[in-house]
Amino acid sequence: MSTEKTIQRILVTGASGYVGQHLLEYLCQTEPPASIAKREIVAWSSTSSTLVITPCIIAKGVTMEWGIIQAVDLTNSVRVTEALARLSSPVHVVIHLAAISGLQACQDDPVRALATNHPTILWEALPNTTRVIAMSTDQVYDGLHPPYSEDASETSPINVYGETKLAMEQGLMELFPQQC
Figure 1 (spheres, rainbow, N blue to C red):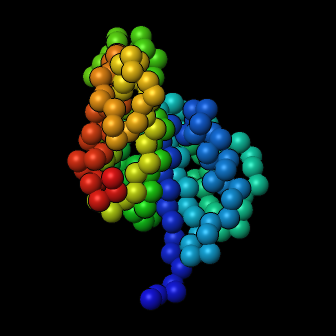
Figure 2 (spheres, rainbow, N blue to C red):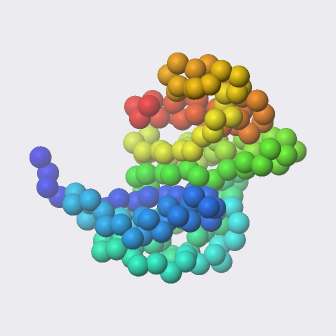
């Protein structure tokens, strides 16, 4: 058994959103486990790359890639590929928080909603050993027969947002079956 410590690279999509901002703060302030030599955090958002990370105490063994939230459009294969190519090593964990969650926005542009909420461009660019953590929604269910159980409840999305999140769940199970 190897006792060599590793570097953990975490990519957070949707980093400028409410959950993303709080997650970044937590990741920056929490020391990595003893088995990890260093945690490198990469933060993406579809908005502006000028969003500087809110100053926070950086824990020992944690670095923030470029110190900013980078603007990366998950629907643009060229931008995703370029952003991944700029990294000095592969991503180990993706925490996918990016979403078009407004019901009207999803209804108005279902293609963009699907491409953002289920970014196959990103998934297909990752090694199949990458751990993916993704946020879904209760809107993958019809709302008629609560309480819901991941294993026992039948999905029946009630809107485009729910449909895109269900597609994400199913796509991740197909692309990364060893993690499901």
